[in-house]
Image 1 (cartoon, protein in one colour):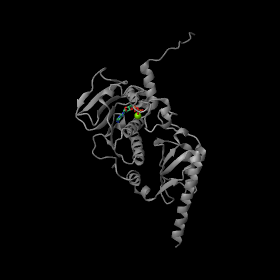
Image 2: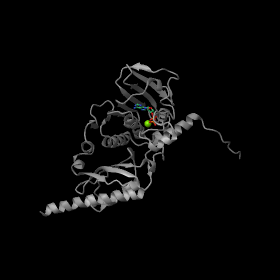
Image 3: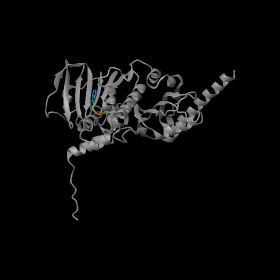
Image 4: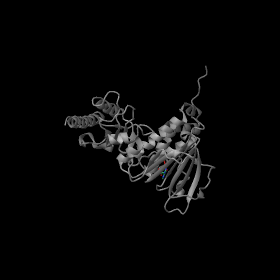
Length: 351
Ligand code: ADP
Ligand code: MG
C-alpha cells in the first residue's frame, strides 16, 4: 500500500473547521454577538431571528459602533480592539479578546454589518465572505442608520451540511436563543433586551434598560419564581480568591417540578460549572419536597489570576483555583439560608 503523504489543508477548510468549533449552533453565534454589543457599551440590544436563527439572525445595538476604517478587517481572524498582548489576558475585562467570533461566523454564513459611530454623519454597510469584505476590496456603502451596530447573519452553516443536519428543529434552536438572551438579560443590568421572531410584532422577551434584577427575573421566568425569590450573597473569602458571590435563589416554598438550568456568571461571563450545579442541587434536595426544582442565579467574582478563561474557544467553560473550597463555601451558605427560611415558616404556621 502506498503511504498517504502529509499535506497542509486548504486555508478555507482550516477556517471552516475552526469556525465550526466556535459556532456550534445559532445560539452560540448569538452569544458572541451579544457579548460584542455589551463590550461596545450598548444599553439596548434587539434580537430577531428566522427559523431559529438558521435562516436569519440579526442583532442591533446602540453601542459605540465600529470605525469606518476598521470595517475592512473586522471579520478577519485574530483582529480585535480588545487584546494587545498575551499578558493582558490576566485582567481582561471585556467578553471578547480573541477576535475570532465575527471571522468564524463569516466563514460559515453570509454576514453583513451596518454601523455608525457618534462622529459619523451616516451609517456604513459592508458584506463579508470568509473573513474578507465581499466583493473583494469593496468600500463601505453609505446608508441611513442610527448610532450603533446591526449585524445580520444569514444562512448559517450553508457550507457545513453535516452541522446543519445535526441541529435539531428551528423551534429548538429558537428556544436556545431565548435561553441565552434570558440569561444575559437577567445578569446585565443597565441594558435593555428584546428578542422576537423576525417579521412579527410581538416580542418574546422585553426587558427595559432600567429595571432591577428581580424584575428581570420576574419578566422572564414568571411571577411564581419571583414571588419565592431570596436575595442571596456569600461572604467574600479572600484566601480562596472569592471577592464576591451574589444573586437570587428560590426558597423552599417554590413549587416547581420543571428543571431550570442554573445561571452562573463568573467574572461577568456566562459559564457552566458542573461541580457548583451539582453541589447546590444536592443542598436543595435536603430542603425541597422530592422532585421539586429550584431557580438559581449567581454571579461570582474571582481573583482573575486564579481563573483561566481561555480553556475553550467558546469561553463557556472556566477553570479556577480553589474550586472545591469555593463550591463548599457557597453550598454551606445556601444550606444556612434555606434552613432559616424553613424555621421561620414552621414558626409562623405554629403561631
Ligand atoms: P473580539 O470580541 O474577540 O474582539 P470579535 O470577532 O467578536 O472579536 O469582534 C472583532 C472586533 O469587532 C471587536 O474587537 C470590536 O472592535 C468590533 N465589534 C464587533 N461587534 C461589535 C459591536 N456590536 N459594536 C462595536 N464593535 C464591535
Ligand atoms: Mg467578540
